[in-house]
Length: 237
Image (cartoon, rainbow, N blue to C red; front, side, top):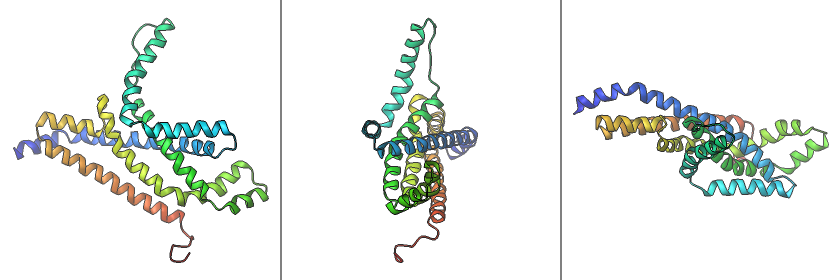
């Protein structure tokens, strides 16, 4: 059994590596889009315009209340049906299927954006008001104020939450396996089922996810140390 399991692991090494790379691609794209959505959402949440605040609040509240798995299934199946009905109504026959990769990135980015909105909002609100007033007093434009004052000042407050969201996102990519898309977890399921070496392959999956999260944690730790460079520590404050 050990000999067969080792051979099976070697046979599946290539697909598992490809699945891990696909998982990272999905996570990176979803995180980047979610970061943009979070900045937009946080700006809207802090807007003086009430309808914009309400829209952003509804987005972050509703999306965080619905399981990601449900959103994935809705977009992949119900979304495909809706697009098919729309194209048929326009006189275009045939079925429209939403790509699994697009579904994965779209749903996870949409969810990340909702959580990132709250992380960014809290980080912006933690910026000392005097810094923003000083920027206004010096006549900074909105863009200069944002990238010279807001971003550097908010990053030390936002990075811990951003790090947690990235780690959660890596694990949430496993949910895409329900639509049969060949990311890491789906490939592991196929390998375990075909070789019957369930413990071996699921243990290998755990090691790969652990390696991803540990390396990510180290990277975010270095980044946080960099952005906090020159700031007083808790003992000095």
